[in-house]
Image (cartoon, rainbow, N blue to C red; front, side, top):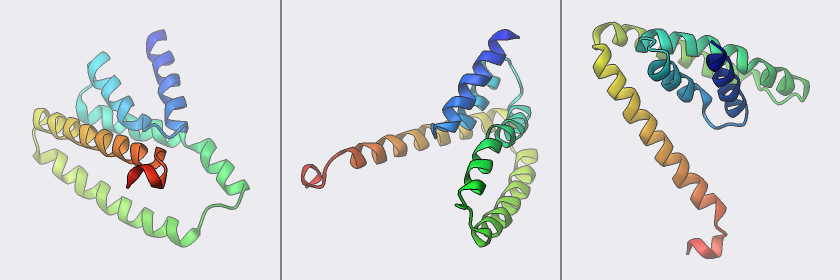
Length: 126
């Protein structure tokens, strides 16, 4: 139990730093707590809501949230969530895990590539 609390705290800190804690939390739940994939994804959504709450408060206080953009993103998010829920009831859990793993690897590679190109000066890239 204490290991889960500590791991959740560390993952929340990483998420707050922009590391992508949501993906880490699903992996942690699936591998170390033997939580089924769909349950892990649902718990991850709740985890995200609570861990991102402080960020929303900070951005609201600094007036960095644009209402129109929020409405557009929320609309597409709802559509994507409904489509994902429908697909997850059709796809077998083992295949769903593999798809999620591939998505995490591709996301990590793209993140590394982006950070590598941003860390170089324009002269070094040429």
